[in-house]
Image 1: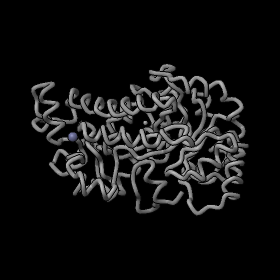
Image 2: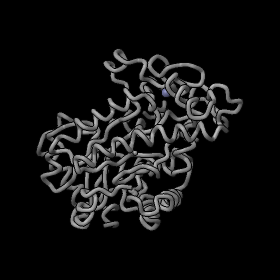
Image 3: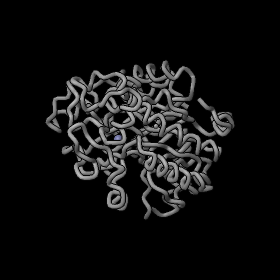
Image 4: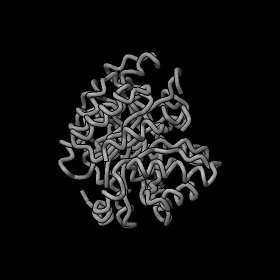
Length: 358
Ligand SMILES: [Zn+2]
């Protein structure tokens, strides 16, 4: 994974470094968990990597207790190599953030609009690759449904893993405030979405109010709820596609239900997933390793057994300290995580630590 990607995953590019119905496949897969391992890893497949090197790398993952790989792009070679070793291969896919040049040119009207009236099609917030789609437009939902259909129809893909399944960050993780020179104790208009004509009209039809007329938009509870439900609807629509294919649907989400709703309007405990992968990247929130366990505990509590939670941990945050890494994994597992999901290419030392949590 290159540096840019590693930051994209948690939200943003920084200057200093670079998403219940327990479906049948979920139940049948769960029974095989023990021999399959229980951990996961996000990987951006290198399309030039030789077959022998891929097999060697993935065999080490399998040996360390990895159950499946979340692949950021579609490479049949990588998926099949993983599957041959008994690993699952899921397609990690950007959902609401879509910077496709073709889409931007063809459908600029599909993009989200900020409270100060700027579209992500022309004025991406924070960084150039922040191109958020509006979740209320039927055309957008139809497009995402079709994308999911295309991915899940492939025989070598075991599931769809949703990423960027949320609104733009109205509040950034604390560690990034200085980087972007923002003080986000109140929600700033330029980072607050979506105030497009479709969203405004739909909300007005439901409540009689225009969200642009709120004196304190960050305190407008029904307006918040409207936006949670817009993303919930996208996810649950895509979940139906996955169920039709008898395949998994999972999501990479913000670290706790509370942070997810507050920072990015993401209400993930109300989604119909097979599993969830909160990105519990403590460094981004200036938290200690112990907080990983606290975040897991909160997520597991609100999920109340609806589907399993795999704790996403950000390897660079551990700065090579294997004791801290072992402690972080321990806190996650002790507090009810079904397993760990690694972000970052693991060294043999990292895999040895993971092996301690079979
Ligand atoms: Zn909208």
